[in-house]
View 1 (cartoon, rainbow, N blue to C red):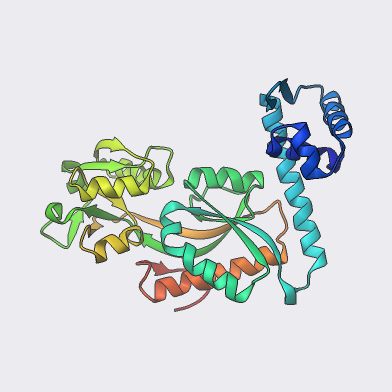
View 2: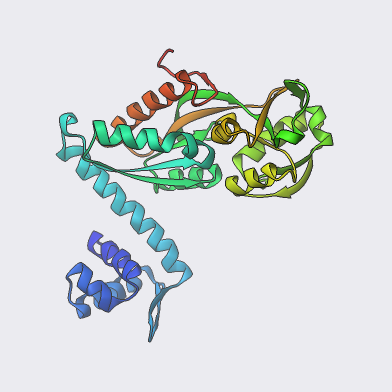
Length: 311
């Protein structure tokens, strides 16, 4: 198996067929078809189903494509690491953000990257924390902001901050007190993410320990839709205060502290222990740490800093 074959595999998939791929890859169509056929022969599986409309991946083809992209990305990381000195940081960095973090941190990190490392190309992927964990483990991400679970030995965590989750309501549904107990939430209809969502897992774990049964009337894996449902008075929710800063400032939502017990989560910058850091990735870790620190220090992210940079 050769790197050229992997590049051709990715090229055919992205172009949708051999003819289109031959133009983008600048490779003759017969040579491209032969390369794919040899790869299938070597693997002993069919990677594509050929049709009059193009080439569609088989299940084996989709698996091979995912691995091919990781291998090619690792090659590019290695090239970047040895070609560029620390004084000219450049290259692509694929960064994962949970949705609640992306709302607060994306623009400050983009601005700082453009100012400090203009030759670094950021690719930001926003998704649920569970998907980000899988993609970081598989090599599809160079680094990711994650909520520390304590059971992932294949990652190196650099702690950043700790935040307390809060009850979020419409103004008319807000409690009359500044704090509410966890047990009192059992009487409130709630909308929460589904059970495979990192936020939901943290909430469920605390509820299980303290024997609290929440009244979850709907599960929604979309933060904007959760906030819309709460604004319309359909239910309340439990979120990071940083995820609703704009809505609270505008008077559309109210945040109330949860105590007895509080629900907290730690936020960290995570990388895979199996992949060496490129200069660009290492530089982005330092930049992200500094930007997260400034967000906490300036009050844009209601949280307690626990990273190495002291406030």
